[in-house]
Length: 199
Image 1 (cartoon, helix red, strand yellow):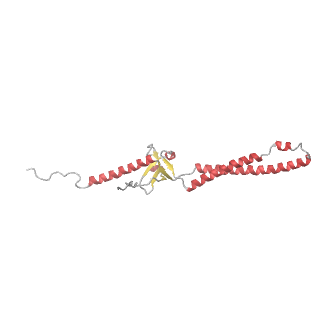
Image 2 (cartoon, rainbow, N blue to C red):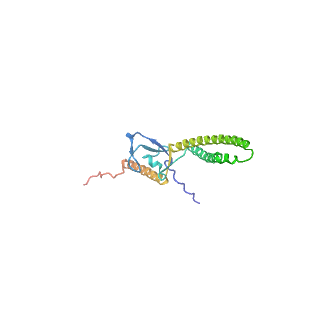
């Protein structure tokens, strides 16, 4: 039986580090050919290319590799969102309405009921205020986390498979060109002129 063929190892992995260069060092973007200051450097320095920052946001070009810090922020945001919805429900349930006071007014023992109603209303009001303040704090924290997620700067990217194949082909073409240039420089590549006499 024949062994299954192993795929050749890629010269560099599909993991690119984003770096910034000075505007004086900018070169043409590999996609749109505008001057770009963002350099994508392959792990192990096997490949690099210049690209515009907005191309990195396109899923058809590259996807960000999410670090642990980012995933922690996203999970915290989900947790805060669920907490906020629960607090909104609790605040709505504890909200003091006028008919709560009015309903108890016409019952027996008006004074006792009125005093009990007022103390319950004060208790409900204080609970309502606590919940309202807690909801405000959670909303503020959720807004901060959402802002942090939106402004998060990714450093590592994984290229789309088609773009990565293009980078591998360009690398192979470059290696082939270097090998060809080396062969041309070797002695004996071109035929030499005849050295014998014509007589």
